[in-house]
Image (cartoon, rainbow, N blue to C red; front, side, top):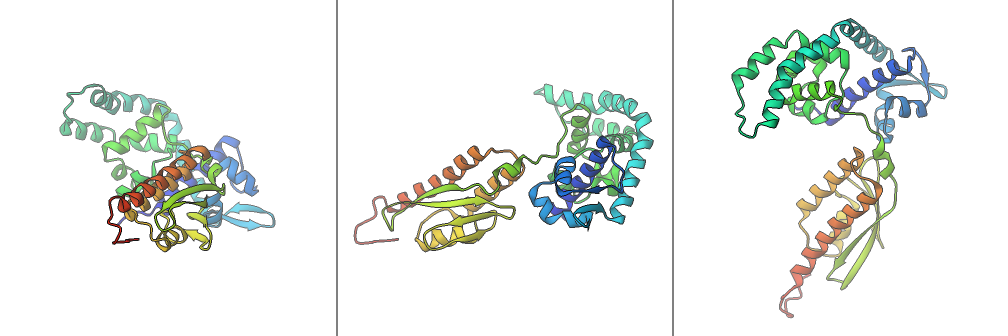
Length: 301
């Protein structure tokens, strides 16, 4: 069964909560403000909207972990405490076995993936993997969990039975692991332009567009409103209303990926504006091409 993005995100948020509690030496039963949850646990604005109530109960003007979450946090912290005494030895063993395999593959252009060697390495690492996982509590790329169809905590050995999963552990050991970022909030609710040429009017129209926690907010002359990450909604309605010819599937794919990159903090507001206009320029170029060399009597719009 395919794991949802929401489930993968909540797993990472849980680990981030635990990391924050351990770093700040908080009591698990402590009360938090929204600002503290954003800062200490790296909750994005979207997380506050959709995940705050999943983890916390509201108590006056503060929030406290739900009983079920408290129990899970305490369980994982207990597992970490058991692992810490053996963690450094486990790291050394992991680097000597899988680390060497990884480096051989990365540094040798003629490397042929030795499946038998890999299976032997993984088998030998069975006792080490739980120590590394609980000891380091890695944040994991969401697609590793989504594509595997499981969360690591459900079955550690089964989850890490893959080259990419072991690479994630290696990156964590080497200080190159995934981190929880809130930089994506910097691109929220900032008005940007989306200038598109239309043959119908013979000039470019400027749309105003903002990234929201759910998708985009679009404003134009007569059609305004919300749309999904891929532009389905107000943006697509505007483009179709003006008879603009464009590669709809490609544009939706580009807008969705750009929204994800912005949410993950991979683009600055300036880069978001630039890439939005690149998509608009793509639409304009296709729209113009449809009119090039069209016989005057056709009048296709």
